Length: 419
Ligand code: EPU
Image (cartoon, rainbow, N blue to C red; front, side):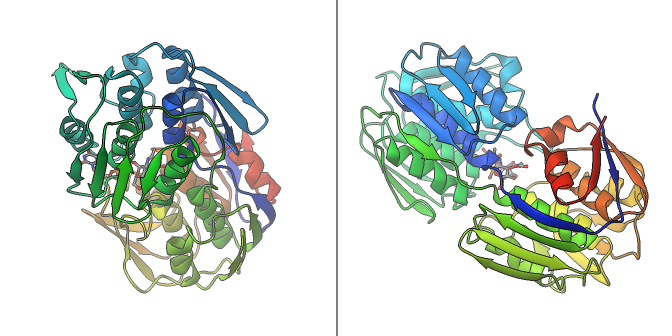
């Protein structure tokens, strides 16, 4: 099992080009199944989750290859409809293949997806939506068989009880080749949904309203291949900015999605960091001595503060002057990183969905284990600001979403070694 050794205490500075977005790439790889031709994804990040998605595509009969920062997916010979349980378990996004396989083949067999343990992550909204679109769903002991009797899903009006990112994406994937019009009310508005829709439009789909809470899709019988550039990863961006905020220093973040990062940047600015953003660049400077954030930091669906950036910002605020309060409203169990931060000297009290972070003058190195993807990134963030060396285990969680994170941190002058 690999570990990261992070030695903190030095200021960071440098330029970094942001990786492509994990949470865009995964549903787009599923969407490539719908195209009867070759899709080229530029700016595709090299992540273990991306390789898991390519294994799923492979077992369905698609050809998937990687060269430089491109992924090439050819779904011309797609033949399979079943995803083996071990591949379903590798990541949460395996569920996204349900809508895509149904859209292309009219039937599929899947099971409950894996992914980061952030509390219960049911798929009830996904299944209810598929049923509304004419899909027959049978669950026998966790193996889920879906079938569309006529072979082609039917457009439907679907109102989501909560703007779930994954359910919105699955509905879109099934609806783009369905018969007639699908309307999603209370749809998720995350930028990655717009990137998915942009890709699908490049394949010939007709979708309107993405980025708003009502999305309309007019199904087309056939979609074709395309060349698409994956958007920048706003959460990786939030992570690297949090590292600079915590350790002190300056950064130019290139190839950034500045508008999409605004909900995070507006909170980070309250810590006293100087931030200038324009076009696709963000410049940030931090003295390393942050102010606590006065207003409660509430995670909310986009355009609210992103849940995926909660842990990394918390790590930076662990050494701020004053007390910051977080409220996690998306996942029931997304404070598992706090034990590690406390072990490093942080003063954090968790009460249900609220975490109270009293800034301490200094953190110290410790032996910790990554609990999940963003929690692991928070441990690196805290370690870069801490005195001494932190040993982080279970880093396979981190590799799921950050491309060569140790190289990126070293580019900024941080001391990180993979052993
Ligand atoms: N939910 C249900 N039923 C459903 C679907 C969701 O109750 O059928 C609940 C979930 O349990 C959760 C909430 O709704 O409490 C939000 O879940 P959502 O479906 O919006 O999230 P997701 O699609 O599972 C994606 C990202 C997550 C990100 C969330 C929220 C991907 C691959 N994953 O997950 O990213 O936190 O949206 O923005 O896009 C990460 O990158 O570290 C990560 C966890």
